Length: 107
Image (tube, rainbow, N blue to C red; front, side, top):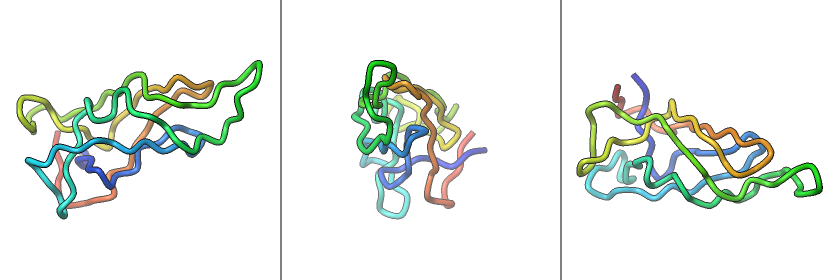
């Protein structure tokens, strides 16, 4: 089981770039809305430390994210988990997350 992501979770690229996920207010953990994958996909990345040059590109947008609960949903869409993986449009495209909460787990 993995912890559910909220709007206060840390979603980031490998080079310290941060993603501010959009939450769904129907379900909260510690008064913070939970996040679905559609609240991460397409979001901007800020603070990536890679410098764009001829051979490198700074992360600016999340291009894909996966890692959602099998049964826990908001509406009809599964919530995102801290086992999340994904990619950005940068030279170091990885994406990962830390839930920042330890109250709600899902599988």
